[in-house]
Length: 545
Image (cartoon, rainbow, N blue to C red; front, side):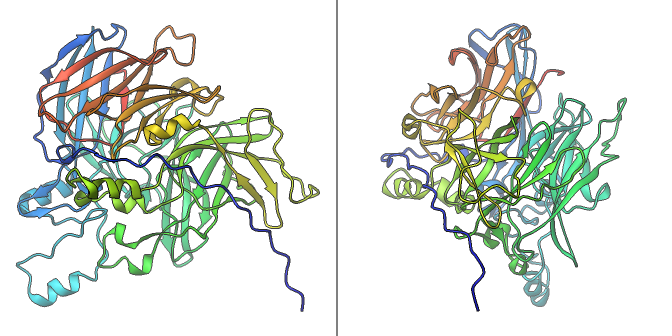
């Protein structure tokens, strides 16, 4: 009996590694609990912040890492602390508030951790009897509403979001916590990402999931624009555009974001899996595993109809958290994203690792982590059955990415979107673009943090014409995700400023808001804040407040 035909094994080069680091400094103060600053305070301006910059730079991230004697074990678990830098006429005020989530309130009332998070399993109630405490170890942890990941917008309202089915509506001026929003009350999903996309018509897209007797499904979601304003959270009209069954329903893929182009949405089913049968009595990071022998599958759906393209696009295993941009050109879908070859990094950002003392152990841990680098994948959208196998289907003059038709689909090989000089800055993450005018369109520039340490220690501007870098870097300073704000009279893609919150472990109360000229990538001004700010996650600029 003859064996069925099989695809050849394609070998894809692994990411290059950054140079080995030595003498890394202690960054424990960057992951230490701080106090909130609910009333706006003045800052000290050095240099000059352009007068046209008017609005609020909103940031999110963990800011409290213990309650009583209970301590969170993973960086993702700290209680959400929201920050607001309000900018007007070249002056800046700063305020911050802890999100009054149910998780925060219950932990505070009990003076211990009673709600499980990504890497921390809540301890059983000591007042329960032995059997109740024992059997609580076998229960599936309830979803948290500790929305530490990002600020997002739906129908003009601001929310903070994480990766469960809960969000919290937020007053973007006072940072006061408003109502809790449960996605499952509007649409049949169990969770949604903290990285939605927005189109020019005002609709918002996101990615969620559900699990039932039929299996595990990934869902592409659309929230339509709503006319007028509401005093309450409103996700009415939310719909599932497309449902994608998991390749392995018992071990679905972890995802953090997704790809949006003018006409398509792409869900990337990657080789980080969650073992659903082991989740009872365990924190999420304990049931995640990296499986480098698996393919990465790119599921492509029409953004308007939800119809899935029948072609199977796949590549060798890779890990991605954040996409840079995507656009279409002459029958191809170009996708740029930050990628690595080791998905174990998700579980590695424990408090123990981040608080390692300077020395050999810290250097060894950092050097064991994979390097995250920018890649480009190109998908041919119209693959004809008569196309011969084993030849490259891409005919674009500006990319070396390839797409080879095989027996089972189209195998993708990426193009590296960098030159070797990026490696000395440790690779990059937290990418941002001129989203307002260039998202889902051909573009030239993106901005990111360089990772020469466990947290970003430089700001980078990548020019894709020649893959040239501009760099802002000062030893001992750790900048946040850069956010681009376009100038009101912009003519070029990079006419505007880049904002980042810069912190240091070397001196207390020495944080500042940095404002760079996006074109030259040189400092225009900074607003020094006399408070401690921990390293955060994501943010956005709100022109309205």
